[in-house]
Image (tube, rainbow, N blue to C red; front, side, top):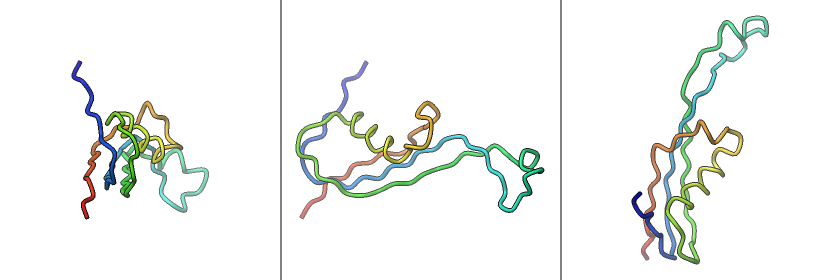
Length: 91
C-alpha cells in the first residue's frame, strides 16, 4: 500500500468534483406517473474554495473532509471522487 501524501500548512485553493447515481423525475410530473417517468442518471457536484491549513494533514483525510461537506445528504458508499486538486496560494 503506497504511503499517503502529507499536505503542509499554508493557504490553498481546492477544486472537488464528485458524482453519484441518482434517479431523475422530470419537473411537473403528476404523482401517478412519477415512477414510470423516472430514469437513472449520474449527478455531479462541483465545489471549490480556499482554506488555510494550520497543521500538516494527510491528503486523503483532507479530501474526505471536503467530500463529506459536499455530500452530507448522500450515502457515502455511492459517492465517487472524480477530481480533487489542491493548489498552494502564493502572494
